[in-house]
Picture 1: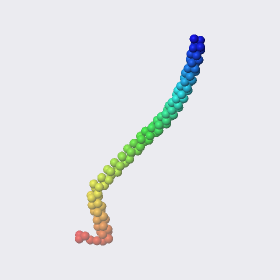
Picture 2 (picture 1 turned 90 degrees about the horizontal axis):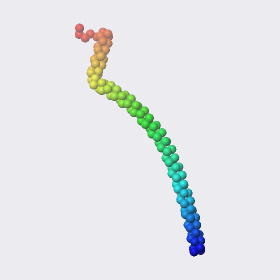
Picture 3 (picture 1 turned 120 degrees about the vertical axis):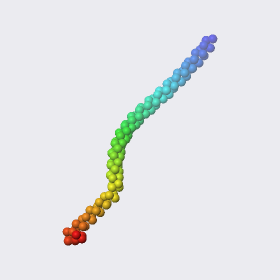
Length: 118
């Protein structure tokens, strides 16, 4: 019985050492995994901060571009109105200019001594 007890005690001691070794390995693996996860979290937080900064810059640039587009749209509208006016009154203006040129030609002729049947 004593021998059986000693043998059982040795087996328990070996089992306990194996269990402690397994537990130590488990703790080491778990610690390494936690450290890797912490490093990944820190890296992702850094990436997130950088991305948020870039997002802010992009939004500011979009606002600036929107304002510039509004100015250009207003300028285009003004040019369009001016162009429409020129096209609308082109014939009338051309006729008026031709009448002015004819009047100047007549005036030059009168000043040169021409008589228009009077």
